[in-house]
Image (cartoon, rainbow over all chains, first blue to last red; front, top):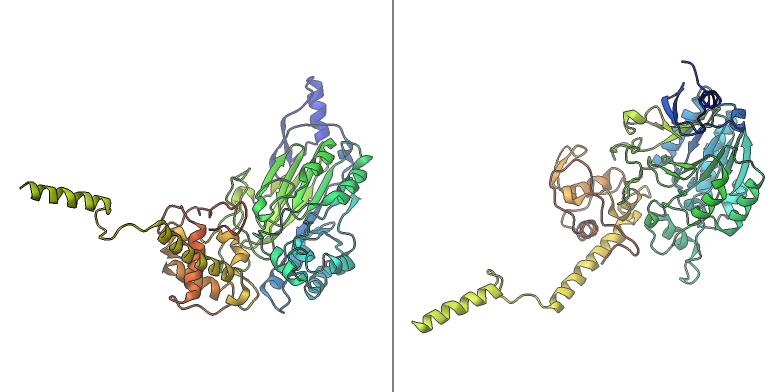
Length: 340
Length: 151
């Protein structure tokens, strides 16, 4: 199949005197993909590549736990990928209660990626953080927010799970603090976000990047208001979206929701990653894109309702988010991946 | 005759005001409040159990998979439950979850713990339509804005 690049489309449209193009491009990995705009841009400097997303492992202290098995299976799958992914992004909640022994177990498992020539990047989730306010996590993995450039794409990772102090006034121990926020429906924890420091950092980080720079941003929680009750949100997402609004297109990938979910806001496309631990039901609100949804789960099968993702980025900055699962979870029409 | 007529009318009025079938007057506000408090106490106990790892042995709680009791679907029981292999009640399903995903010991159907779990689950689905046997699309629990979701 001949591939039509974004630049080719632009040439065609220019010859017909059409400024903006709304067309269908043939893509080798997807069949038909709608392209709402075509621009000559630095995107042509992207060398196509793929990376894997794993997250929400929720490892417990006890040995041979079912969540060890599912994370191990995801890591084994990634190691066996050919061609190898350029890197793995771990999208938060490696541990369940932020214990050193849980984080160490997780690091040992993730380090198998490195041993097999696959680097990984990591951001924290609330389950990694609230026993010691991120101290162990930071000692183990470094800064919880960062950016890097890879093959023409600017990647950003942020720590989106920072809440205001709910523990001091209540005289809670670190363990009580952790147990409270370990519940999805914690009703004393409040809404979380990235906070001022990271917003300032983000502003500086992208200041000198031209608008046609392809941006991929990773956060544990979604950068849109999905269901605040379960912290399916990021408090300062509006500010983040504003800072990133100058870019032609931003791909935002998040964890935390343990489910297939998709949304678009302005110049951003958002997609939720599956957990390796357990799936979460859809909250009592309308889905923005109800056709992008996972199927019923067999709760007796530890490999059902969970998984990881392979993300393919082509030279025109079209992304394809392919949910990788071990049971019949993904509707047939999404099996080839969700276009980003 | 007039006396008899008066008597018939009187008993009619009485029975209407007593809601046809009740021989006792309706519950007072105070009665209703006390009964509701009793229920909420059980719901609260169920909420605690629902979020406690002590029902199982692998650290998991009911709430791991069912935040705010979502996807427990008490409105659809009894129903044929493929993983149980027969028509199951909500209590059967609670026990299945304790035994399989939580790797715990099943509760006696008439135990205080079972009643409490059932009370919490039903209460989080209050107002939902009963659809016994429904294995189609699940209905979510009540939408909670703040607090535990009750009273």
